[in-house]
Image 1 (cartoon, rainbow, N blue to C red):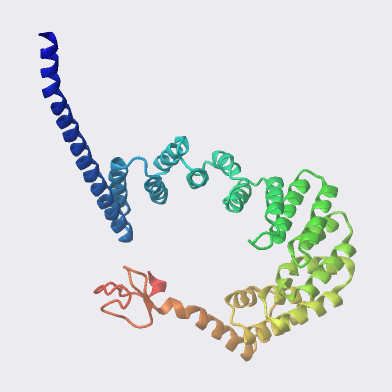
Image 2 (image 1 turned 60 degrees about the vertical axis):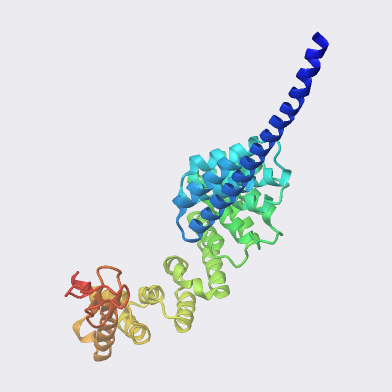
Length: 385
């Protein structure tokens, strides 16, 4: 009797079990298909928002897509980048840290997530954490980009020793030469050495800087200052004259030092000849003032010549403020040159400016040509605003 009962039970239990299993599988397949359909819709919706520069809506759509398919790493990367672009660095960090915590992440995606995390820290201004994250990218496809980011960090933190080391690693790569930047780093170290009264160490850094970038002006200018401070004026003057002959465009920056050293070394003629050559190549108010300092009796003629070639309010102001100039020295040509300079400088001040977009015009517009706004121009010219 028990055997018959068991057999009957099996006869109706087996079909029932099969039916339940079939129904469960169908329900699971439908749910999976529904989830698969919802995820792409949310993803494409997010892309649409992104193309329309609607970052907030794009983030919401990508979050929805991630909820439907939490294992998709690409959506996490897109979401992390969006958070960073929007300035939501905490959430960007959480996304990239979540990716790094996954055990099923490929090596390439893990390196990509590490790079994203480093960029999150860098953009957030967390330089110490950014440095730590960037150093983990050594030996990866992101190594060069990481080194460039580290160089930026060391510049911002004024860690010139680390900056020099990083620049040397980047030298010879496909990002160009870093010797000029390294020269500036050595100049910064020289400035620190001078601040702590270590002129010999400063000279060493400046000599290295000159070797790294022979055409750079800064190392020679700084080295000349070191020599002048030590009382070696002749050596300082020679250094500056050589620099001026090699790079004439830098002469305006040297004028003050050249005049001082010329007077100390009785080398006014040499320096004046150099300044006259530089003035003929390209007029400069600094060069004209330096020549005036060496030739006070020729001040009026020098500035008249300068104004005839280059309209300059600074030159006009210098002439008007010159207490040594007599009224008779103000020639008709000089007056005309000064008037021309003032007229040219004042021209932009006579325009009208749109209060909405800043568009400027010589004539008054009722409708702005820039922003198309109506009556956005004040009835006053720029100088009167």
